[in-house]
Amino acid sequence: MSHNVACRAFTIVEVVMSLLIVSLVLLAGLRTAAATGSEARIRRERDIGRLLADQLLAEIMALPSEDPNETPVFGMELDETGTSRRDVLDDIDDYNGWTESPVRAADGTIIAQYSQWRRDVEVDWISTIVPIAVPTDTRLKGVTVTVYAPSGKSYTRTALRSMHEYRDRSDDEQVVRIGVSLTAGVDGRNITETAASVVVLENSPEGN
Image (cartoon, rainbow, N blue to C red; front, side, top):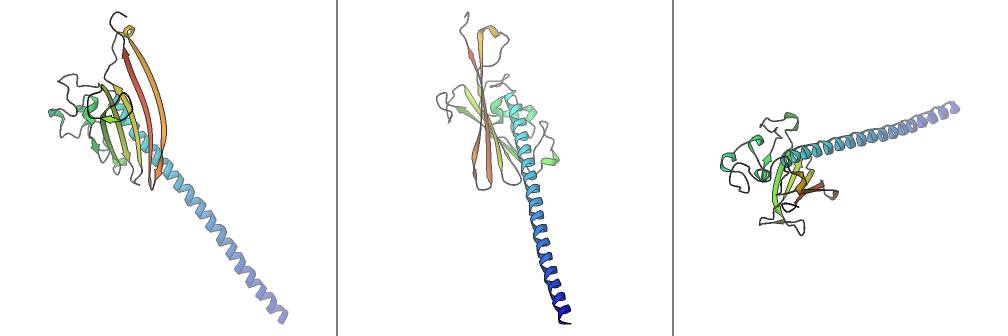
């Protein structure tokens, strides 16, 4: 009788220990799955942030440096203010101060899947000596597009544009392209990633 009781007691201990081990294994598996899912969400958010920033920056950089139709002013002209449509903007600095949330297409249509995202644009005159913003006309403009994700992270793209434009006569201009990429540090929950590209056009004197 005592032998049977001892066996039953030992069996109960084994069951308890087995349950504990199984629980620990399941917990570790759940944590791994959760971490994998979290990493996937982070990667997806990062990819979307970069895509939204790159798309808007490419749209801006495709425009002339100055308004081709009116006397140049820095920022929007009177007929462009108060609009939610980017397709009425016709030069780079028209985008200065542009902000949109939710994200929109160029014609102002809301893109529903990005309703919790925001995009901001800043355009500045940039010093030709050191790459910092200055208040006076330097003939070099810097464009910064910042995308804010629902999580609070931000993704930034920057580019520089000279006031010299592409022209049909390729024999009197020299095109120099410089690309630079870098990643900034982590500040709390906010991770800012920056990529800079430079397009510089240097015109030779007439007849050279």
